[in-house]
Image 1 (cartoon, rainbow, N blue to C red):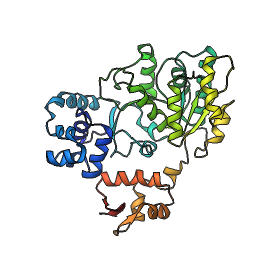
Image 2 (cartoon, helix red, strand yellow):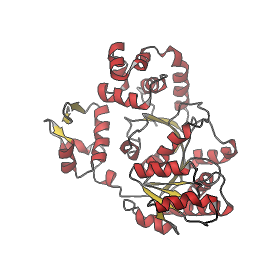
Image 3 (tube, rainbow, N blue to C red):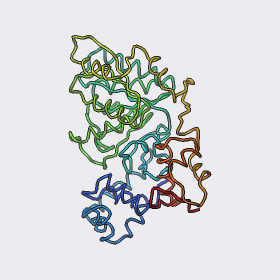
Image 4 (cartoon, one colour):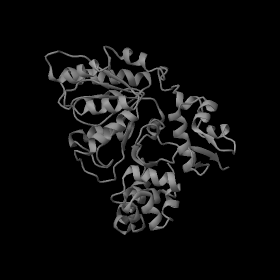
Length: 362
């Protein structure tokens, strides 16, 4: 991936202390690309995003972190993917809080492929580990990329299954992408870096911290068309991923288990709440209506096959137009049109007007 000349500005935006992802997205929406944000006055920045935004004009404290990230990105197999990049996952643009950028090691092409989250307990049973690996291998052979969190137990088994077939796997980390946690999965992480993808929204060097993992979980589900829970206790973090999947409009699946096993109680609770009971890989594949099994990857996701990137401009004249009208013209959902409008706005192709209107600029 060729390094973006504006990457330093993106890094400055995201590494500034106290400036959260929501504030950053607000600044991007109001001003445009980071270079434009950084040319604003302190008063303008603070009016738009609060006192922390003023710190953008004093980058001395983060200069070393920016330089470190730039050096890291220049190495083979490393990349930083920003909201303005064509490789940014389209499904993530449809969730309420997409990260402004992602650090990645490995195969960026996996970000554009159909994916399924497979998650479960760290303290899995032997049967649960076997199920996770076999199910993931079957999904991968059908063309789905397996997304999980590199934890011990079910996650690790799911990654191994994904690596065993064509769909491969994405590991979403709750640390910096250069920090492997837990250390017991270092060898597995190396295999994923070579044949799959390691992904994180956290800055390089970020250690494992409890508050990071729920944030990581919403990306696991956000990258995926559905989420399969293999084994989960009632207090399992996997249920956070399942809830995030449901809130994001993704399919939720669960394997049933023994009524006597504490590691089945979370799954049974999900099934009672409407998750689809799964007994075979075919049960999941049959439900993913946007996925067409071909033996290798290729899918007909409604968001991508109906309109190629940038095609939304063909449906925009130079007169202001509202979101509903664009949805009708393009034959896309509001989420899909909103995602493409964000790309076009960041690229300087459209402007947002008062009253929820959009206007083509060139």
